[in-house]
Amino acid sequence: MKLLRVGTAGAERPALLDAGGTLRDLSGLVDDIDGALLADDAALGRIRAAAGAGELPALDAGGLRIGPPLGRIGKIVCIGLNYHDHARETGAEPPAEPVVFMKAPDTVVGPNDTVLVPRGSEKTDWEVELAVVIGRTARYLDSAEEALAHVAGYAVAHDVSEREFQIERGGTWDKGKNCETFNPLGPWLVTADEVPDPQRLSLKLWVNGELKQDGTTAEQIFPVGEVVRYLSHFMTLYPGDVINTGTPAGVAMGHPEPKPYLRGGDVVELEIAGLGRQRQELKNA
Image (cartoon, helix red, strand yellow):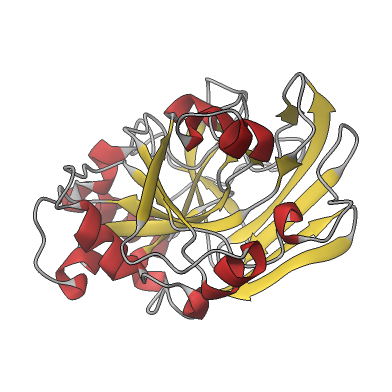
C-alpha cells in the first residue's frame, strides 16, 4: 500500500494512493498514519480490505498539499557515510560500524514544502536518502532477517545538511542537521510488502534540473536489515520511528571547488524508484 497524509500543515488527513493512481480517503477508517496504526495489523487489514473492495471514497487531489506520510514521529535516527561511493567522494574511510546521529522530528516537512536556507549559511547541501519506518518494537535483534520483519515501510527522505555548521563549528553533527525544514519526507509511506529487496532501489536527485545524484542502495556499506539490527542494540526502536539510511555520491561537499552549495531560489527534485518524488524550492530563512 501507498499511505499518505494530505491537507494543510498540522491538519493532514490519512489517505491511500490506489493502484490506478486515485487518491482515496482513509479518515473514515483511521485517525492518522502513525506508529499506532503501523503496529495494528487488524487496522492495516481493514484498510487493505476496504481498498480491495473499492469502498474508499475518492479525494480530489487538485491543489491538495501532500504532507509528511507519517504523523507523531517518535525519533529520527540517521546513518552517516553509509555508501561506498559517498565515502570515496568525501575522502573518508568506510566506517567499521555505522555512524549514528539524530534529527529532531520537528525538522520533518512535506515532500514539496519549502526548504529554508539557514541564516548565515554558506554550505547548505542536499542528500537523497531511503527512509525506513519501524512498525514493531525492536530490542536486541539477533539478525538482519529479524530486523527486516520489524520494518513497516519505506519512504523518500531529503537529509538536508549545512556542512559548515556540521563539520567546522565544533561538537557533534547536530547543528548542521537540525535546522528548520531539513527533513522533507514522502510523498508516500510504501508498505514493506511492496519493497521485496530494499538493496535494489535507485536514488536520484536534481538541482535546478541538473542530475547530481544517481545511485543505488546496493552501494550501502551497512544494508537496511543490518542497520536496524545494529541500532536495536543501542536504543529501542518503536513503531513510528524513522531511520534515514545515508546518501550516495554526488553531494555538493564532494564536488571540486567552488562547491555548488544550495542558495535561496534553487529547486531540488529527488526520487527513489517505487517510492515517489519530491520537489522543493529553497528560500532564505
